[in-house]
Length: 355
Image 1: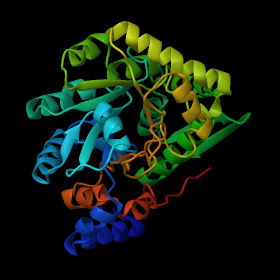
Image 2: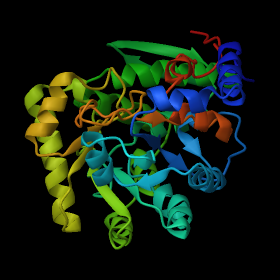
Image 3: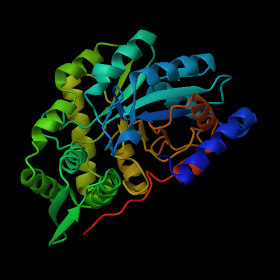
């Protein structure tokens, strides 16, 4: 069921479209263009418990979105062109850049056939531990554990905690609670926590991560396409704000070096892992520049302004909510007029966890 706040936000966006505000606002707030952020692209699933559904779109929706962008006369560009347009005078046509985070296997399996058929540029940000087979997709491990259990125990902050999660609503709430807690942990403690949880409930985190991530052969296939731009997303996809500055800089530089060595091409662009306001600091934008990146993207909402009015190392993106299938909503968001109301939407209604 759609929550009341989310329903009101959707209604507001639809009204903005039909009132023509998207077109009026585009001239005033639309800037040079926008970067769309996607995560997973795969066919719709039937499971009732889908805690990361907001980060998923279907191949059919991706196809519809690209057709719509062409119909709306947007220039679909790669990140090099985004950086150029961000520092020059505004051009007659606005741009959209399609970006995919996390190096997920579904990029090559489900997204690439659509993108290749349309012959459009796109950018993939890769955390290099994952194609090496040593990354840990802790968010998938957490989902797998909660999906299969009705009772769950784990050690958090030195204490054994117990949860009863019989309903889908309770599972969703526990996923939100635990994922927020895990994201707050230093990388070493996060690894201990998720591996302990997966061992307790017989979830093979290494296999799950490997099956869900592109390997170097997949990336080589993409690298053969001139429409593909690669960016780095560190080595371990660690939340930078949880790392000491020296370690954060090392994650940036090592991720770039590994990707350049493997693909034999220059890597000029960077994505802050997770990318929201809690995941990185302004100091990290300085580090990204020091590390030699031309750009660094976040998931903080907004559009890219022309004439150097948007920092190339703190570029905003429109983080598309995969539960939303309306292209009218996308049209309004791209206009730059109504980003904030959507970001205030809760992930899902509240639920009760029995301790």
